[in-house]
Image (tube, rainbow, N blue to C red; front, side, top):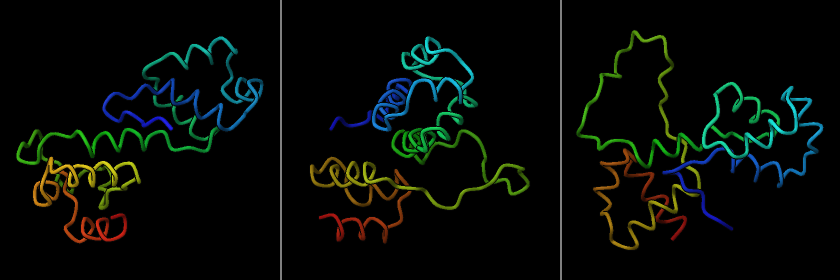
Length: 143
């Protein structure tokens, strides 16, 4: 099984993989997306697609493609010491998310850094904002 490259997401390729895995007929896809077969195959070649289309794909294929981008943010966000903007404003209309959602790929990525001594526990906790208790649970559960 090929690993997903969370640093360089090629969403069209991932859509195609999910379609093949789901074995959904192209006619059903075209009807749902309201486009031609050529437009669908062209989307498979795109590195990124508009959000409204990605939402439709997520519904059709019953897969949260947005989570791929969330994982990118967790793994490749700027170091915690750099503040680009103040997002602690409680008056914002945007929802504030309290928990990160960690996939098994993220957990394995983090534990691999520990195993290979690329980063220490303290560095991982600080850089990725993973609670100490969560990291210890992962070590106990997966190692």
